[in-house]
Length: 70
Image (cartoon, rainbow, N blue to C red):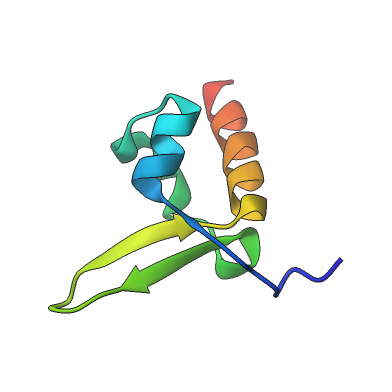
């Protein structure tokens, strides 16, 4: 399976809502993730940016949330 073919991403706000978590908690967990883990930064105009996740990234994030709860 090739991991470099991404057809869509979800913003951190959407992922937090879907997982029933706060954006701040997701951000604190995701800040240590790498691009290979399925997280990317999306940059807009005027220096605005947001974290987004691939499907693979959301799976990894779920694992990290689970480990963080232990």
